[in-house]
Length: 66
Image (tube, rainbow, N blue to C red; front, side, top):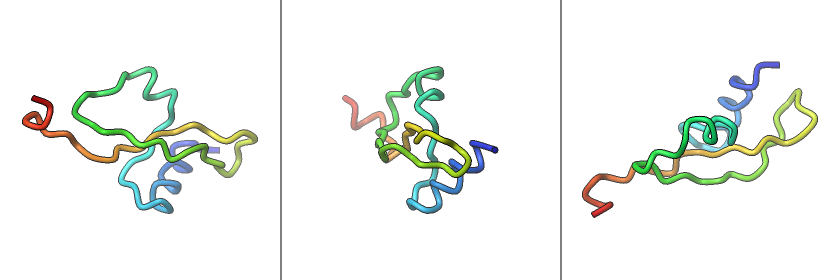
């Protein structure tokens, strides 16, 4: 099973540009210029357990953070 392609499919189904695993966010850290959204547990085909994932809701412009 290819988790990346399953996450791509989940993004298309939910109308998101990008969905990534919570493990990836933990490893890379949250960037302050993005607002994240938790779409809830994702039941991905080929996985026994739902996966916790995140999507980027919007980009926060530098002027908005001042």
